[in-house]
Length: 362
Image 1 (tube, rainbow, N blue to C red):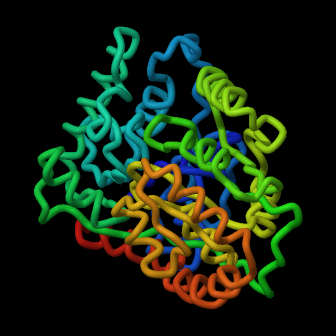
Image 2: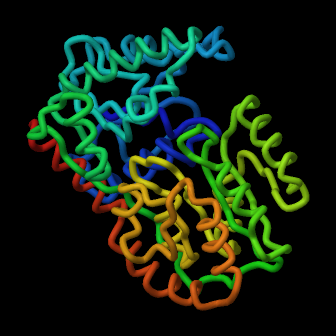
Image 3: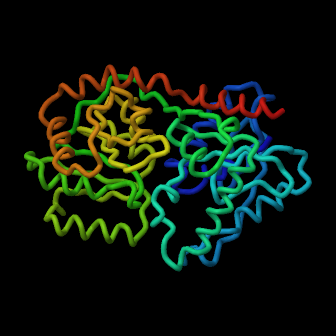
């Protein structure tokens, strides 16, 4: 068995798929050596205690033309040709198994099916074709790992995967330890993530314009494209909120941890999520979390979310943000109930569950 661990490499390796794969690898390290997969890695990733197959794909010449990068898949096929491995664990849509190798697929979400405009436009023809191939891979996979019941239902109903081959493995979170930090002053709400339309970041801008706390701010972090950032800047300027919105862009894991610890609340306003790791990380840090009413986010936070708000309810988001800025009650509850909820999600348990999937196919 070899798992694609290449998402750990690069600047985005601490968020999204990279964070999940990194957590799995940490959990695998707690298993006996015989229970660990080999890892396909790239860049400077050198996890100890694993057999590593390294690829260093060349730079894709069309990376700025919205054309899928075929180089990692080609490099992986070359590196794995003739390797004594019978099963490939694919962790991203862009990199599937080499020809003739059985596959376990991870499906994080089916956002392109839920929001077809994601793959719209004539320039996205190759991306649409790549996604169709990915859906075919899901249907052919020996097992499909998902992180929430919401995605499990999606892959069965929308992608046509046999439910008997779907396995749900929730993600984990690293405990922060110690006492939660008091909220910073002036207060701020933190958002961490991409700016794709389904992430619904603009509702936070509109809510801030309705807030009755003139000193409340937004801090936004994440790996963003120039085009989406330009659109967000326009929305902020139109609302007259430029002095109250701090666009940090990509930050390191340590910087994000510090921003989260001092936040009045973490906001996750997505219209759809596959899991919702930022919400879980907020719970683990003892920080109030405000989420949308998306099903997967509800699975993660349970009743411990400070508030759950319809993604289109601007006034509701403003009220929720104001409520956490009003006093310490929400933070005190998050420090106990939120952390207790997060304690049920560990990387050791997640990795052990993934290893169990491998054993089913041994």
